[in-house]
Length: 195
Image 1 (cartoon, rainbow, N blue to C red):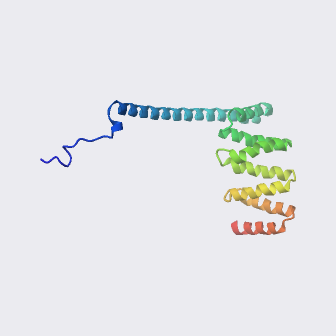
Image 2 (cartoon, one colour):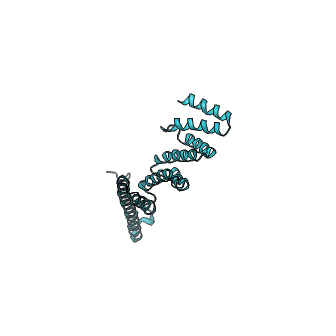
Image 3 (tube, rainbow, N blue to C red):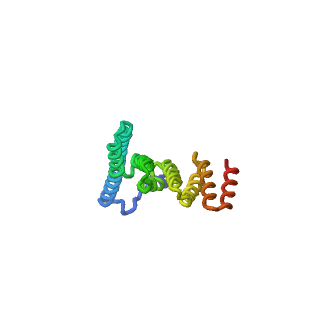
């Protein structure tokens, strides 16, 4: 039997994988991979725990408002925004606080909560809802240029959102209120062609 093709030659490993150095290198690589896996698991569990705690607090806040205990509800919402700032519940709390402060006529406070949510919210589905509230806030304050700019941003960013048609109609109105008749025509033509 001829062993020239396979048998007589031993498998030659590169020099850096031979001897004690190779074993140390392999063990080091395995340990590094295990450390990375453990860190990922820890971060994931921590994130899940924070999301669960924030969601529980949000439920408590809604319960407080339902029981007409606005002070306690606001305390819960502010706690969520402060202590769980990057969770979905915190962005939902910001939306609620924005609506709450608009209802009180405290537009600057409302705008602060809504602006953050419109740009940073996770899940991203909350962003157009916050931007629509910002448009409404500017409209209520008769700040039609700001409302127009926000509405234009909305239709550019969310062309297929369920609110886009009504935002387009508002956009045409804002252009009319600011004296931009050519833009009113353009927006009306966009409405006719898209809807």
